[in-house]
Image (cartoon, rainbow, N blue to C red; front, side, top):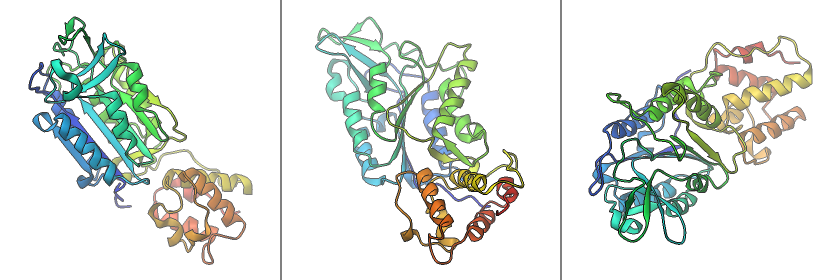
Length: 366
């Protein structure tokens, strides 16, 4: 089967290594953004449309430019899409007045006026809430080792202390909302390491491997949210002798949703087998699980229902692909779903799409 692409994927990738008024970070920060962009847009990996992936590096990543790009992402991504935000650069926890606040430092950030030259977690949360995509994943790598400009002893001249890093409360704030999740490179009391001479930070090294297929343990052809974090969370501590631990936050995520294709959508010949003979109830359950994996966005995914002779207008609209498949197969079992669709035509259409999937070919119509 040829690569099907992932046109519903959108990404905004931001990296700042060279700052205007605070200390710089390793060039690996820029490599991280460029390599993630290349992986997301590669037809052999995540298969995002290059037009849907925006990168802002160094001088292009000012406060105004980042906020504008977030607004543009909100305008472009629809409710059916997947959106990713990746930020790598300095982060600071500002305390000493009425409350503590975390900020992301943009190219033009000035320690004397952080309110107008950086992006607070409150501002970022508001911007993210404008994005209509039903699946939104935020990556924050803002606690880099060696970021001496923002330290535990520095003040901004206004009676406030600036602490290196990004707070747990800020992480949680950015994950609020249905279908929203956050992955941070390390805990708030840890540093995000860049090994001397390495092309990428430790976190991005693991993230890239996951996006390139290592997170797809079941060879489903998709990189899924929980699978990706599980892979990264295990890989990073191994690279640093248990000195860095990624953080995952999700406030209202119901399913292990896909965020990209895995290796262009290729499925493996390996995988769990379905018995040649199963009871009718088991058959429908097995078929439902297979279709959820192969067509995670429901009967409309790749127009499989229509191509099998079905009529989508005969199906109830559901918020998730899993729920949509459950209702669609129940309708089909009762003789509905369209005049020309049948169990056999649906199964044959799926087999044509996934010619090397043994789970489909081991199914026997009861």
